[in-house]
Length: 99
Image (cartoon, rainbow, N blue to C red; front, side, top):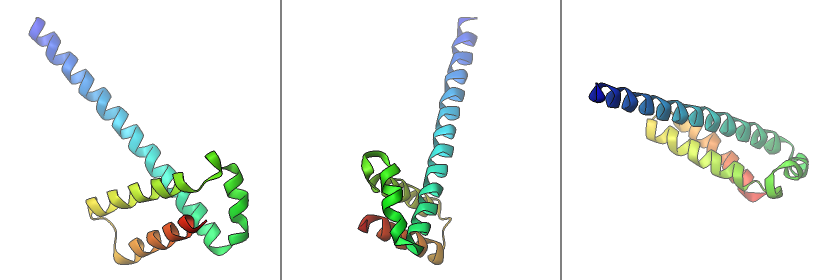
């Protein structure tokens, strides 16, 4: 009986860890896409950059750059991006880094 309880507890912990990891991945993807949208807007209208900056933590685009770098790394690791998509990411990263 103790063995069965330990196995069930182990499965429960594993399930909770996977749920937590899945939720974190979802949040990271949403944050990366928001960073992409902001970067795309700023790419077209650089004058809007200051308005976005005022609403960001520490008034910096650095968190957006970090999130996009993580997402790009994941996409490269999973081999799901093509040259065009990767180029667009890099262009937006360069824009956000320059601000």
